[in-house]
Image 1 (cartoon, rainbow, N blue to C red):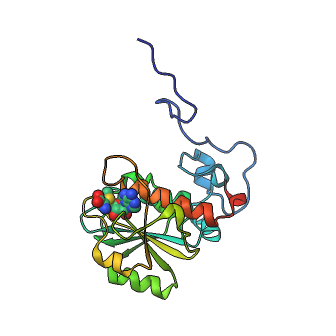
Image 2 (image 1 turned 180 degrees about the horizontal axis):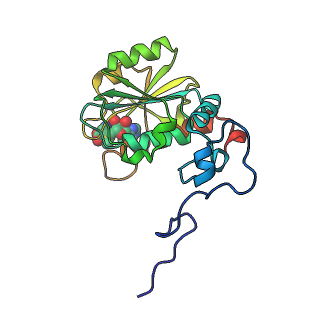
Image 3 (image 1 turned 90 degrees about the horizontal axis):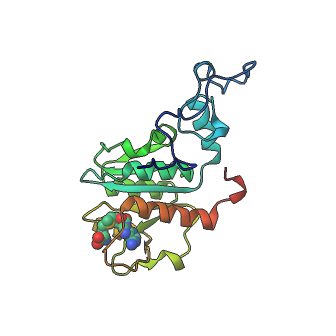
Amino acid sequence: MTEEPVGPTEWGPAEPVGVGPWEGPWPTDERYDPELLAGGDRRNVVDAYRYWRREAVVADLDRRRHDFHVAIENFQHDHNIGTVVRTANAFAAKAVHIVGRRRWNRRGAMVTDRYQHVLHHPDVTALLDYAAAEDLTVVAVDNTPGSRPIERTPLPARCLLLFGQEGPGLTEQARQGAAVVVSIAQFGSTRSINAGVAAGIVMHAWVRQHADLDTAW
Ligand SMILES: C[S@@+](CC[C@H](N)C(=O)[O-])C[C@H]1O[C@@H](n2cnc3c(N)ncnc32)[C@H](O)[C@@H]1O
């Protein structure tokens, strides 16, 4: 039996990820973290942020963040939230909002929540009040009757993309409170796709319509 070769983006078991201690004279810029310079930087961050203090990374991201927010209902401990947070970080969402239960499973976030603003709202009313105060158009995402295909619906630049949870999907209050409900076209037998996957598709639809692609890494 031969061993499967490790692909270019796979991490071999013995291969440490990231970079080792800084070689040569240390940079004097205060964004650099002396501990990381001395010991190496094994974090899940892009090369541009290697050896930077966490606060410096967040400050730089705050300068680059986009005008869309992401919200997900969490009334039953939705296990997709980590994935949503990680993808929101990758696409530089302004913030992630968790509606309902405060606790969520951080495993899928791969520590990206350290660099992402994550806000909590006890219920849908509080979320909608926040959106109104921030002048954000609420775009609910679910494949319920009356929804518009996202493939043919322009997304507002300033918006809050609101997702439901596995099982029940979006609450009636969330659907009613949204300016529009959009659905992702499906062609198979399943009633729906995973909420984390749906969030990635819709965030990327926003990116395709509004982001300055010249600023992507
Ligand atoms: C697994 S779905 C459950 C609800 C779904 N309406 C059903 O009947 O099965 C959980 C969430 O994922 C998102 N979602 C899944 N499939 C979608 C699709 N085709 N279009 C839009 N959103 C979808 C929505 O935010 C939804 O609330």
